[in-house]
Every structure is written in structure tokens, then in C-alpha cells.
Amino acid sequence: HLKMMLPKRLDVGLISLCLIIRCTGGNERCGASIRGACPPAWSQWGDKCYKQLSKDLPWVKAKQECIKMGSVLVMPQSQEETEFLQKNLIDKFWIDCNDLQVEGTWVCQDGTTDVEYRNWRDGEPSNFGGGEDCVVAKEAGWNDAPCETHVPTICKRPPPQLHL
Ligand SMILES: [Ca+2]
Ligand SMILES: [Ca+2]
Image (cartoon, rainbow, N blue to C red; front, side, top):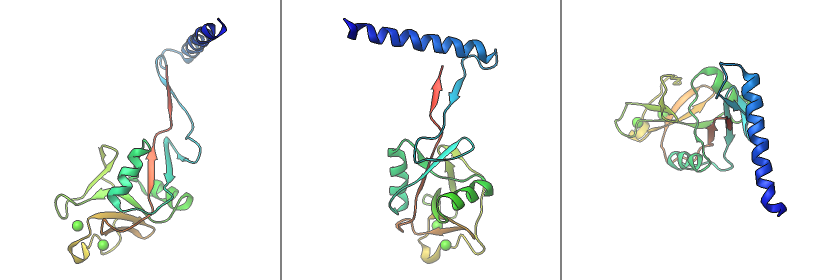
């Protein structure tokens, strides 16, 4: 009998909590979500969470591994974001930027959002040897490199949210 009662009591508790938050949140925040902190082992910068994978990977594999973790391959949108990653995680890493479809036409995306920010190192992109279609961020700037190269990988995700 006790087992039957427990879920009901939890439900009542959760509903009360929601009502309390709605009441104290004011009109603007009614129905809004609360953003939590980053999960353990993820580093936080603003409203983004980052984690470096334990293995260096080829670019396509790097993208796949991030998606498996419910995240995306990182694509910094500013110098500030890049510096945070280089100081706190690693100075060299793949970014979600490639010219695989049309040589010289760079597709750079933060998740599904196109990113305009570019930070090429002098002399890059070089498409050296005709086979450099993926991008590595380094301290001196970006370099296009062969996608098969094993490079450190950083994944990005938003902090978990509690929807009310
Ligand atoms: Ca290329
Ligand atoms: Ca290059």
C-alpha cells in the first residue's frame, strides 16, 4: 500500500514547487525554464558547457562522438570563447567547419546555426596537397587540415534546463 502512495505524494510535491516558482517569478517569467549548472566534468562559459573527449579523433568521428553524448562539435563564435577553451581545456582542437562539399566554400556551424566568425592564421586556408577540408583552431588562428588527422575534440552543449 505504501508503494502506491509514494508516487502520488511526489506528484503533489512537484506541483506545489511549480506553483511556488510561478507565483514568485512574476509575469515575465511565467512558464519560463530554469537553467541549471553544467553537468559534472563539463566546463561552463556563459550559457554553454564544454568537455574534451579522452581520445584524439578524425573530424567526422569527432562530430559523431559529440552527438552520441547529446552535444555538438564545438564551433567558437568569438575570440573570447576561443580563449576560454584554449586556457581551460586545450590549445588545439577541431571546430565544426569544413569545405567538404565545395572546395573553398566553408560551412561553419554551431549545432544547426551558421557561424560567420572566422579566425584564419596567416596563409590559411591553404588546402595543402589538395586535401585539407576540416578546420583546427590553434592559438595562432585556424588551419585547414586533412579530415583524417587525429586531433583533440571538444564537445559543446547547453546546461540542462528544468521546464515549468
Ligand atoms: Ca579544402
Ligand atoms: Ca592548411
